[in-house]
Amino acid sequence: MGVTIEPTVNADAYWVNSKEVYLDSNNKWIAREELTTNEATAFRSYIGKQVKIQTN
Image 1 (tube, rainbow, N blue to C red):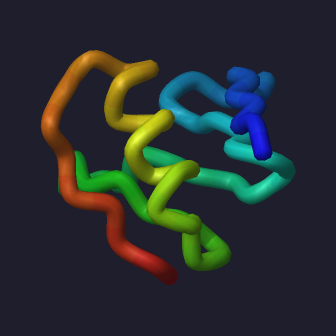
Image 2 (image 1 turned 180 degrees about the vertical axis):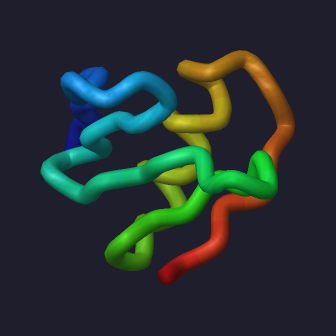
């Protein structure tokens, strides 16, 4: 299954297959729902950094 990543209207937030991922005030990426391995890998590639994604 493919992964779709779209920016939201809010800066520093994205939709990853309809799951919101945002950058919090501590500069940590937070997923409102748990991302699959493929989704997390695609998101890291999209933003071009090795980042840890936490689930809210």
